[in-house]
Length: 233
Ligand SMILES: [Fe+2]
Ligand SMILES: [Fe+2]
Image 1 (tube, protein in one colour):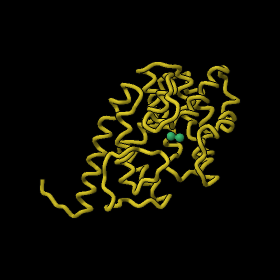
Image 2 (cartoon, rainbow, N blue to C red):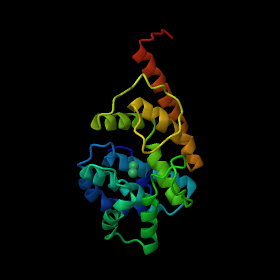
Image 3 (cartoon, protein in one colour):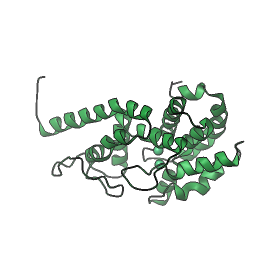
Image 4 (cartoon, rainbow, N blue to C red):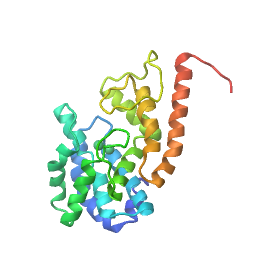
């Protein structure tokens, strides 16, 4: 009903695989309350196919890895701890068994999923293949902008993170993946504002620009309203 899979519709190769996966993934993700719902997978898929149309790469690897990349989040919610993408690979493999893909494509999908959360400023392996770069960028594009703000607060509500902590100044400090941010506003400031500049591809950096501006404006307006500053212009 929506245009969210605009790029899937244009690509018959990928659509066949995604159609096969959709019911199973939909079922698997019904239990989610962490901001990593099936909607996030649909949007990540759409960004990934758009980026692939501009940047190249194997469209089947890009599409499938984008659509099933966050299985580790559901496993984490079930186990009440952080489950890394690497730990999720045996479960990911089960989703791939019925698909008519080559062994090379299967290994490539697993590789891209394993490394999708290793950002350049967070340490870890720096991926060099275009398919893994696109998956990281697509995932990060959905973490910023209007949707990023909503997902950040949803996560906060689900995990008892407060909206804002005024005693801790907002500044671009050194990002630490494992450090808890003091509030949702701090998370937007400390992490999400930095994602745009760390995108792997030129196309994603362009898309990220207006999303980053919106988040900066949102924080500024939030602080104004929080502190009771009133202005007529
Ligand atoms: Fe993830
Ligand atoms: Fe994700």
